[in-house]
Length: 144
Image (cartoon, one colour):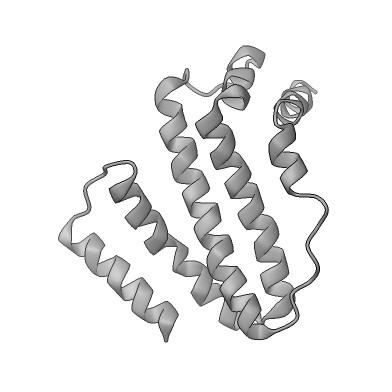
């Protein structure tokens, strides 16, 4: 019950993010558009997580206490990351509607490469040589 109230508090504190999700976009009809949407969705989802991580630098340790949840919901960087993460999930649903899973999933996996690059350049995290190789491999694999 407390968890439901906490989630309601987060939703109430994020009208901009929720408004961005409606009305729902028209279904994507072409496979190519679905694959492009899968890439954008995966990038949005992964960049959203990186933004949330960035936002936690200024926030207390996560807990289900109301004041902590409200602090997260009010933090602009964390809120933007949450919105990007949710928007990515919604876009992925449309991508899956337009293209076969066997094509969408490899493209979605390239989001990890986007996350690694974003984390390196935005969060200033170091990537080791093997991680750079992974970014390159994911990019080549997604590109076919």
